[in-house]
Image 1 (tube, rainbow, N blue to C red):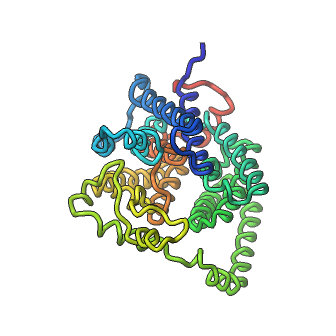
Image 2: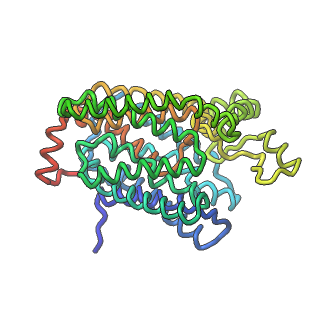
Image 3: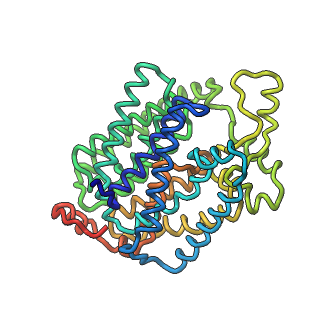
Length: 412
């Protein structure tokens, strides 16, 4: 009989959340097609496993966290349930959208992943699995881009976006995983270029910046390596400076790169919502009216989206749209202190990775990357669990290395 333990469940939760997003954003299935049914079943399976192993099968998990976080997570889960259930209706189409799409109800239960993050050793168990997903995503991305260019590009990043987790934890990665991580960085950059994703530039820059911080702080890295990396970075900066004029001219002549696609999102959403709605949000199925897209439809512009917007592309605005200022404040009260603890109050690189991971999304949410039920946000909240765990923060890198060499199976 096949038994699903916590680590198998963790891997399946991540895998079953990735496939639906790739299919939805690459093939755009509609109606009651076989593809839509399969990805819905995978999504629901992931959700069931997450709820089961975070709320039900948790008798061996010690919640050794500060009461501050216990109170905030209670408030967060309560408000998330309110956000989801206030969108319930007798309309079948609404119910399918609510529970069958990663952007709706299930986007707000991803914080349950903190339970998996309390045990830092869970990361060691999934590093190899994450490496395999990155390798699969890299091969798929390069192959599809060569054959079809941008036809399937928008769903590919789901298998690549979490590369910083392995990148920032190089000391605990195998030589094979290190090579895969570098390949995944290249593949993510390639996918982002083909998709004309400007936010990816900031994402890659932040991942390299935080890696550099830990690299130069590390006492185990030899001086020769540091000199080599310093020389490489210096030459890169000089090269960019020399080419800055050409780069500026190219960007200035690229309408896609220079078009402001964010300011109107802020103005339209705040104009459409009342003060009360801004405080409590409009629920998991909440929408707002966009005069801009209405105008595009009215004049018959090809490819224009619906004027009724189900998603706001700015992360913080999406949180406000669905859960209001209340949801946003609770998120920030959890994430900001967690990032601080992870970066400045930890003794190992995995917890520091968790802190950097949180900081990246606190920054990126000002521009894009809305919360949804996907590997990246599941792993983000797992990182939160690791960052706020005193036990995880007190473990040293040497202890983690000894554990990996010993191969003992600690209670999970």
